[in-house]
Image (cartoon, rainbow, N blue to C red; front, top):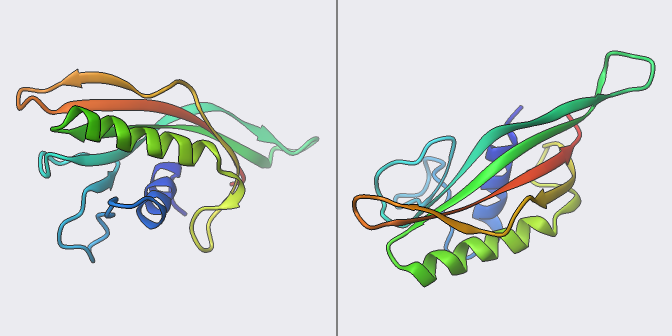
Length: 140
C-alpha cells in the first residue's frame, strides 16, 4: 500500500520528461515525495495533504472510495523553467481519470487540480517555489 503522493510521483517520473524519481536507482534524482531535500536546486516534491472523508459502501462500514489531497511543488532557479514544468504537471495529472497510476496500485477515478499553479515563495537562495493542490477520488 502506498500513498497518493507516492503514486503520483511515480507516475510523473514515468510520464513527464526531465522528472527523475528518487527511488534509489537514479544517481541524480529531481523528483521526491513526502520531503524535499535542499539539493538539487531544481526539484519537484509531492506531499500528501489530507482531504475529504472517505465514502462508504451503502449499509456497511467498509470504505468504498478515498478522497485524499496532494500538493505539488516545483522549486526552480529560473522563473520560466519552473513555471513551464509545474504547468506541464498540472495539465497532465488533471487529465488522469479512471486509471491505475502504478502497476498493482489503486484505481484513480479522477484527479482535479484545485487552482492554477502559482508562486508560493522565494527562498534565501533565490529559488522560486511554484505550487498547486489537487483533490483525488480513488479506490482504496
